[in-house]
Length: 130
Image (cartoon, rainbow, N blue to C red; front, side, top):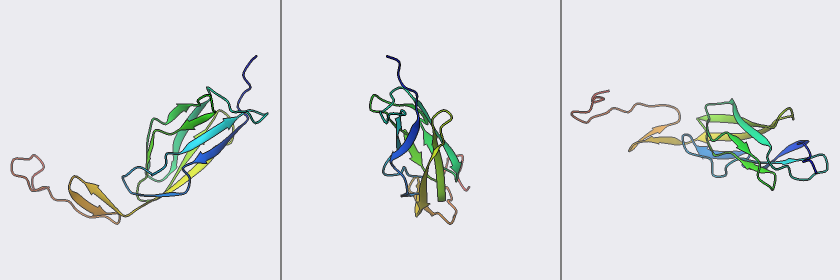
């Protein structure tokens, strides 16, 4: 029996989140892919892409498991509103949103989302004084 092709993709988890800019969202985005009979589709390729904002995505091309579910490897939103899409073939994409807030920590320094300056003060370091 041939597998039925994907007919729908839906958000399962990970939408409308808030995270500190530069840190992963608490719940990785997950989708479920179903055929025309509403059954999960295994082996469907799901591509997660940035739509707007300065998000970073890891392991963004996934394949659905036997339960029809695919999960993005990681989503690290930048400051402000971030939007990503999950696309399966020619089906309409689903859209995930996250808000990047708060301060971002670089090394042992904290910079507010509104901006700031970090000065390296380590003698002998090539970045000393920058």
